Image 1: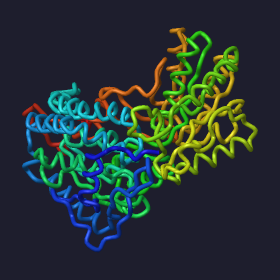
Image 2: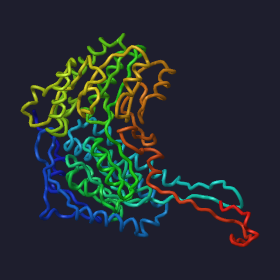
Image 3: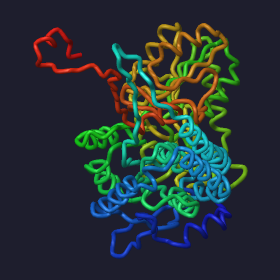
Image 4: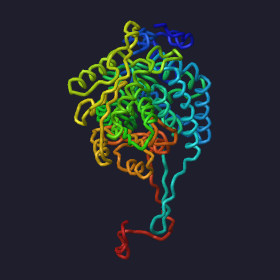
Length: 513
């Protein structure tokens, strides 16, 4: 396999080979701190090293964020000034888009077509939240009696933001934007696998004039740095995207200090395919929903429930489509699917291939490492499809997080809905049908926070994003996310000058409330 031609990304990644701590407006030298390698999934090569931040480092980052939050220059900044700054941050990211998508491809292995398309939307998150900052209004509440009731929203404070490897900059940005627009400050811990674009964003924002301490970064392992951050008593809000079990642990830790929480966790998205929808289009959406990002998304199309009248043909076409996908160097223009993020993640998927075979499911595509990429050093895997799966099989119930999907038949709407909802997860779901009434029935009844009708992976800065059940709590994107960065004060004003003394005899018939 040819090495990727990534002069800009490689030179930027290797210019400072040890990266990690960005506290109080400056990069903190690694010194004697423990470090670990950052590996490019496409080649298996070390492209940088990152600091494994200690509890003391996390303390310093939280203290920096607290000072910045209390600083009058940030705390008392007018909404208009804050909105202009947040808008500017989006513009600055856009100026560096080519560099950022190359660096993201280098660091997490997604093909450049994907990273370019995804990071092209990141600036809009800042512009949208800048608009929300300008439009923020507090409510006047009609109350009984001669009173004026109103609310005041105030930023919650210091936000701990723990981001995953699959969409490093997008997921960081979807929480950085409302953090800055609301007047909060933050400490971000990016995934130990993919810290580089988050670090580059810090440098861009710092150069653009974001005040010191508003945005701090601590890199490190989840068991050390992540634990220190999520359990820190100095945080006021935890935002985490990750697996359900890691979210459960982090959420329990943050709950001890009663921190607000937004958790986007695991998923096992069902896709219900009816025979009234174009079959080839269904297959194309199935491949898109399953194999984008090498299937390393919580909203991956991991369970296809297909009406029995088209089941056999759907399986055949999806298997052929999976086999046709070009796997390879994420920087090559012909590549359609890149590597997984690590050898550990690839082995997890290979383990599930064995599980599926042992359970009696039929492997119809993939299931192994592409023959031409075995010696590449990268973490490549074939797009994998299992058919004749039953709802109780592990491969139909557990999140695999790779280019892996299962296909199951159904006969009736009621059966499809029952199978779709029979899951501990509830992040996303999709329906393929031309029957408008049926589509809306499923949208109402599917137990998921995100529903796509005749589409998949569609997202917008204004549309709320999040799950139910073991897929997490709270919402990102949209007005709902912005509002979660505030707490609300209720103010009650007595407009009367009438005398009051509760303990005087003539006052005994007055109500306390």
